[in-house]
Amino acid sequence: MNKKNKIIALVKIWPVKIAVLFLIAAILFLNSFYLFNHKEEHPQKPIPSDYNAKNLVKPTDIPEKPASLSAQLKIPIVMYHYVEYVQDKGDHTRLSLDTTPYTFESELKSLINEGYQTYFVKDIPKILEGKIKYDLSKAVVLTFDDGYEDFYLNAFPLIKEYHVKATLFPIYDFINKQGFLTDTEIREIIASGLVEIGSHTLDHVGLKHVSSQVAQKQIVDSKKDLEQEFGIKVESFAYPFGAFNNNVMEMVKQASYSAAVSVIPGSIQSENNLFYLSRIRAGFFSYNIAGVLSALKK
Image (tube, rainbow, N blue to C red; front, side, top):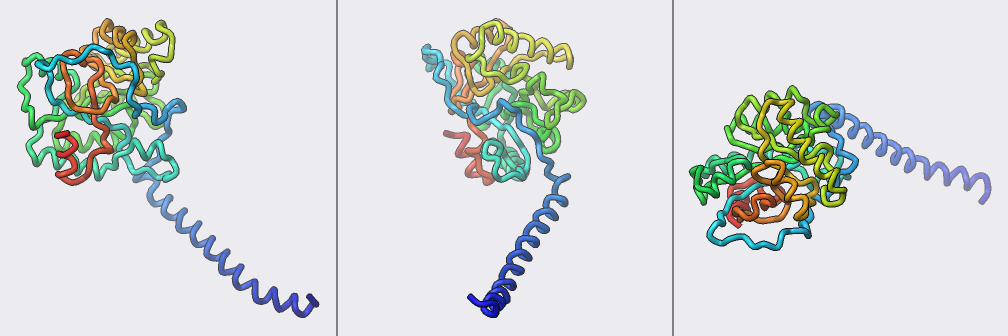
């Protein structure tokens, strides 16, 4: 190609290159503009380094003892984690565990409009014993794992607005860490009378994968520390990652908890599974009444 032809080729190509560069610059500008204007509305929260989707896996160490049919009740327990608008669409773990504030409020509206009553996890043993009045067809238990700060920022205001009960399972050693609840926020949450505080261990270890000594410390000390720090009685426990076996379950019983929740899907509870209560993942919900009620009635 001679010099003249090269010049002609460059003249033809440069407008295309300039157009592409302009388009890329425009996209970057718009993206930066969006993030700048939404960073306060939807702040990003960190995920613990040991946190992953394993907490949605059904445990393999379910005790063999079958539940007594005469003691069974349908008590739907809904499991939430994040309540926020996730900005990083590549964060698949966070997205899989998230419920947007809009969806959460829509679910609460649906429950209230249909006359549902909410209960704490600590109420379940008394419900099964007949000590607490319970409407079999109009009851639900709302639970929140890990103690992320978005509970205080997004879920708690709605819990107060619609005056529903919830059980929160903070990880004790994560309190006051970035992205998690502060002790001041937890005290305000407790003072509302609408939120039960349960234990989720000291630092979210898989209890069936550690020594008995470590598991014992995680189960016992987290309860003791929460009670001493906040002046409350801690009665409920949540297994990190849903990981437990008979040995771990016995430790929870011996530590004087009255109930423990698992990630085993379902809504049938009994006196025999008080320490591996089934839950419904919040992702099964829909923001319309039919979707919410259908999930609760399964």
